[in-house]
Image (cartoon, rainbow, N blue to C red; front, side, top):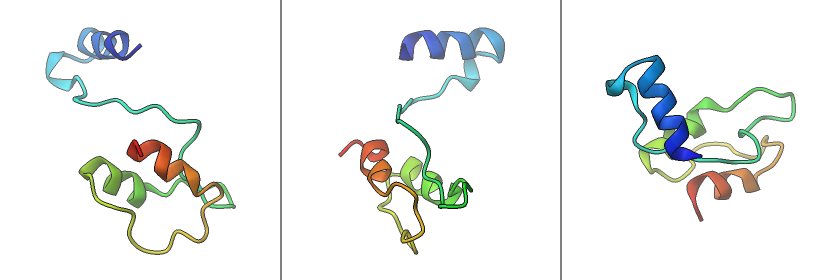
Length: 69
């Protein structure tokens, strides 16, 4: 699946846009009101542990899933 996605991006956008890493998860880190917590996604992409308030997450276990733990 990962190879297929990378090939599709290279074909549609260009080889320079191919992602280095693709992570699959059940959903995205969202608050109870449904807002995506982009700061957590940026931190995960950088390899940093979650920082700040995560008490409003709808499903806190998604952070472990996306970080590969």
